[in-house]
Image (tube, rainbow, N blue to C red; front, side, top):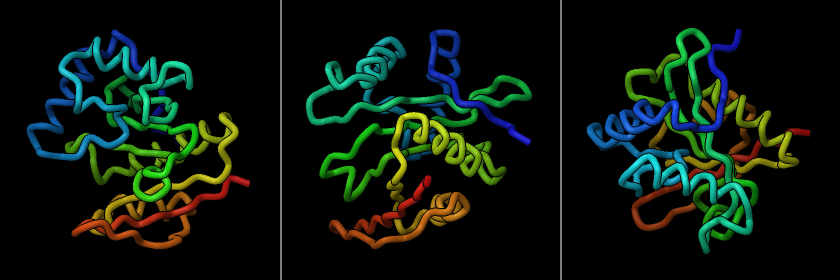
Length: 174
């Protein structure tokens, strides 16, 4: 049974989104799949960015169009995680970022939310016409690797850059 739904961020969730950011900053966690939330000072600045990211005409130079979603608990409406779907890949994303990035609040990890979020994101990819999905994770992020494998990810290879090793998985939606 579904525990989550993906919705587009709105001002209704402003406080929860800023608390989400603070939680990740306080725990020195990587804010993956948030459409650049870590790089913005205010909700308004971030919200404008993710709206601009939706279209090729308005996305910031060097980036690709993407859609950022909040993963909301169906039970109580709480923000559990965030997921970002990139509509296409550039050279960097092909090596290190992939089509989908996601993160889950530290307090909500280990409950199967990331697996469900990725499953929901793959459904959105299908609607967008993206059928061969690249998802990457750091080699030492075993939880993320398990999430990708549970969603039928197949490891293609690993890319090393400095001390970082990125695992590249493909999911075929056909």
